[in-house]
Amino acid sequence: IWRLNYIGNKAFAGTSFDTVTIPYLFDGDWDGAFADMPLLSTVELDDRVYKLPVGVFENSASLLVKGFTDKITVYDERCFSNSGLTGNISIINTDGMSVSIEDYAFANCKNITILYIDGCASYIGDSAFLGCSSIETLGLGEGVSRLGPYCFSGLLGLTYVKLPSTIDSLNEG
Image (cartoon, rainbow, N blue to C red; front, side, top):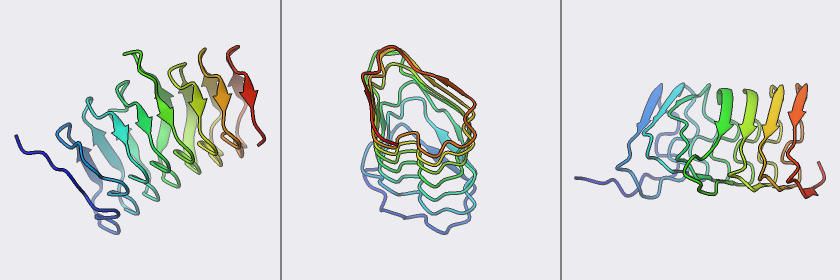
């Protein structure tokens, strides 16, 4: 079986692809590989993909992600920032694995309306959801204990928030 080990930063920038499929067999370095794709509308993830690397879909168009799975354990810095990520996002892990939501991971994703993060993510990074102005409902599960500075700053449409009793640190912003 052939495995792809590397896709360069912004390798597909400016291309007219509208769909990208990420297979399980890809386990190498793909930071920023699909950033700056103005027509990208659909991302299909194999249900065994476990990491979304730095800036992988940054500045890409209206994204519908098929296969947002409970296997993803790393949402790296800026993986979706300034993208058109659309819909309701649930970050869960049914395998009991810890999930990492890094700084600016979803910053300025203006089309997310509902966000739920279960207790698998004990810490949510700095500015992780900064400027996600269409989020109306935010739910954090028991186990989330620390929120980085400005992680939910600029959620102008927010009408409902559910915070867990496990939060022991709320930073500025």
